[in-house]
Length: 108
Image 1 (cartoon, helix red, strand yellow):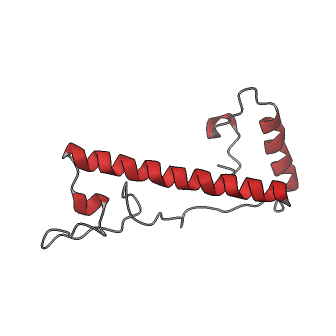
Image 2 (cartoon, one colour):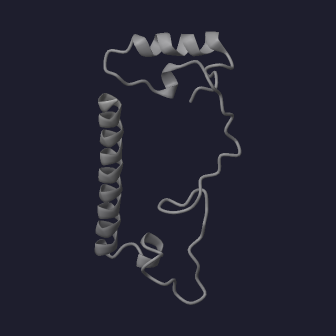
């Protein structure tokens, strides 16, 4: 139980660090003067009159991603396909694998 709690706490800590890093990047972008504050921090800076912060899937810092074209798969749907993928992962030397290293079977 303590081991599982340690894993969860480690995950929460890394999430918090990631959010802090993302916030620092947005602050640096704002300080550069190249990006408007209302796009980086819409909760704190009002948009100029007549302009709105768009909620687009391709917006770099805001928006909701569009997953409509994603075909979701789970290991239980095709066990042989999943085991082939896992055997490739097990052969890794550096601990990383990219989509180009796999046959296009929808596991990207």
